[in-house]
Amino acid sequence: MITCDVKIARSFISDEDYITAHGKTTLGYKQVADKSGPGSEWLGWRDILADPNDAILEEIDSLAASIRKEADIFIVCGIGGSYLGAKAVIDALSSHFSSNGPEIIYAGHHMGGKYLQELLQYIQAPKADGSQKQVYLNVISKSGSTLETALSFRAIRKLMEEMYSDDASKHIICTTSEEGGILNQLIDAKGYRKFVIPNDIGGRFSVLTPVGLIPIAVAGIDIKALFYGAVAAYNRYEEDNEDIIEYTSLRNALHKAGKTIDVISCFEPELASFGGWIQQLMGESEGKEGKGIFPAVASFSTDLHSLGQFIQQGKRSLMETFLIVENSFSKIEVEELEGDDDKLNYLAGKSFHDINKKARLGTTEAHQDGNVPIINLTIDALNAENLGELIYFYELSTGVFVYSLGVNPFNQPGVEDYKKAMYRLLGKD
Ligand code: PA5
Picture 1 (tube, helix red, strand yellow):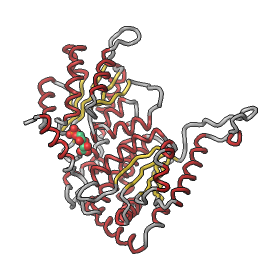
Picture 2: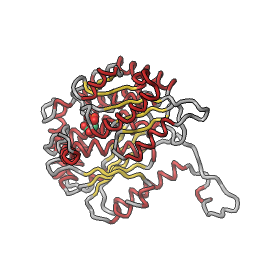
Picture 3: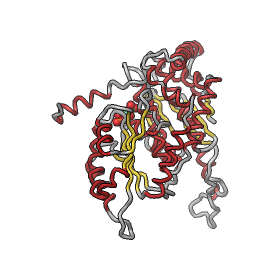
Picture 4: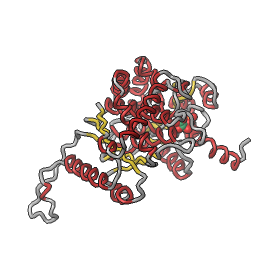
């Protein structure tokens, strides 16, 4: 379960400003709840939690089980909301150094030629015993035409057709809209297996649809626990939304007070990609009409040795959100060393988790002294259920906060500008 502690941030805001912000976010919440705001046709991410479809979870689990038996490599080919949610959950819940299933590789999220070339070489290279690698590919694109994804898909499927001839289509799974788009034409022509992204769910809100759930299940993560964690959060906030209102009110008041950057910080390196998912959710939803708080991601204590100086003493335009995991699975402790030649015996017997916690508390103290408003979001343990809750907490609070700014959270008109210029330079009709 998530606990949201806004005490420190609240001390930066006057009662009057808080009351004004509270009014705006209460209205924002109402726009989400009764689908009365702009972009309300994109609120399907709430409906799937209000009325869970176990059949689709079963179907994905069974597909994932068969891929996990067969595959050496599973490629997730997508960009933005089509891969960040899956990566967030997979990185958070998988081992850093070993895998209990296929190796998960991401593609289609940029146009770096070196990366693609090396990926194609890696796929083709035989295994240690000389046999061919079993590669499965999940291409994910709601529009079915995003250039980064389409280009990588073209190269990878060509190679897979060479490797597996007529069987190639059995190795390719497509996740896209019900109809329309070039990807749907390819699905019809080649007979690829297809999963649907519901029309009323936008990319960055789609992690709990087949978009995120297929890769997450292939990584061996319990998607039912993840999904039902989100359902539990949905039900809880439907009954009592005070945490959401408080959190979004604080962000609204801080936005008004000139805070233009939210540093989303965690002290667990496995949560860095989760920060990346939050960053995209907030960035594409908020940053419009000259408004919004720029979401930055920091992984502490690593980034205390890079961004820490700026956070402590740079321009005071920052707020900070700490993502905290209260209990750790790791029991590793500092051992007593005879002779104490590195002078670390004062920490002997302490767990790394406790030392890390002191680093967080020390950082909180220092940043508060440096006039940074801080919000603490805590989960008791890093598991699928809690991540599901956190996903819904962020989806809901993003919708409410952006409405409180008077902006449509669910479109991304600015993204088209780079595409138009790029396509003109590439000579596309
Ligand atoms: O959140 C969004 O809508 C975007 O980030 C999209 O997910 C991203 O642009 C990829 O689009 P598509 O799935 O159509 O390839």
